[in-house]
Image (cartoon, rainbow, N blue to C red; front, side, top):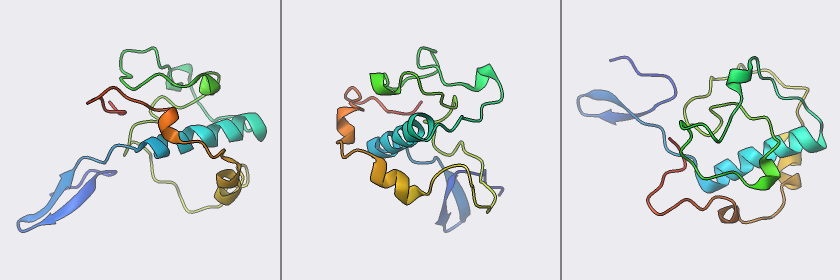
Length: 127
């Protein structure tokens, strides 16, 4: 049985079965947005987007998550930034453009992520 990349797998008695990837938690989404905010606003790193169609637009009907906070309105995000398991695996090479993760994590303000993402009861953050 072929396993789709990006999906978690479970070992069962009859072999390997694929399952859907888990939804991102509120903190995962908060940290992704804060990372992009720090990169784009503080470190002035330009995002790598090939086409205008690849840019995230929260007004499109395909996005069913909560509205983004005003702080992140002018960020340029990839259209699938909030979908788990949709990222390509990166090659093992060091990036010289972005700062190390520990610098970013120290720069992230100590704000409770639930203040930013409060979905309606029963509503998933991801499509």
